[in-house]
Image 1 (cartoon, rainbow, N blue to C red):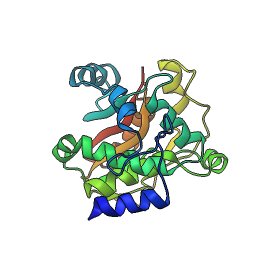
Image 2: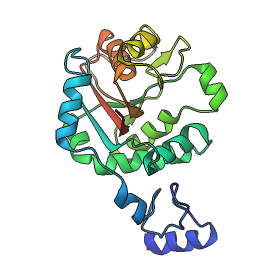
Image 3: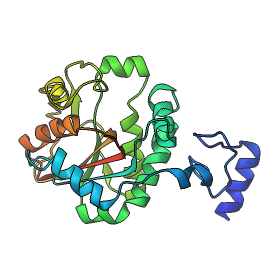
Image 4: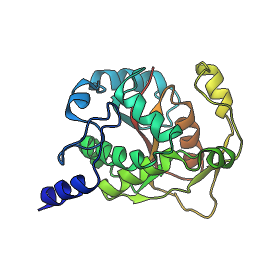
Length: 228
């Protein structure tokens, strides 16, 4: 019945692959089968190495998962760039649900109380019109059934883009850039922090520090993609 409904809706409002613009079938979402087949996923071995490199020393993040590798010119980069800069925020919800389905086993093991997005500064939100991680996290929360808490922390300081910065510069760039929402209670809670792409982990670690300093029990990191 659901597949029949999707077929009818696709006839009225066709959907297209966000990478190659091929018309999607009722069973496809976000990417066509051809593009999805080419997308590199993050292996368990890679995740273990990246956790050690990005998070182990600071002991702020208890575990992390990313679904795809962020490859230059690839389908995932195209979709995320459209989500962030092309005003196609719907990608966030679709991608978030896909992440939650594909990584369901790990998310369930974390036994989290809340899902929260990494915030952006109000000036950047005004420029862009939205926070892409908000929609990504909301999709994850919707699919997983974990409570969505979009305003646990806020970015109090406008920072330059992290794209061209090295690890040390990224850490300095986001240091003390976030503020805890005192109206929220996170004491003893397990929280999943969501970002679109994890590169060095500096931003998500700084957010985790704020939550742990305010009583959170454990913080996990989750992203759609992992970059070098």
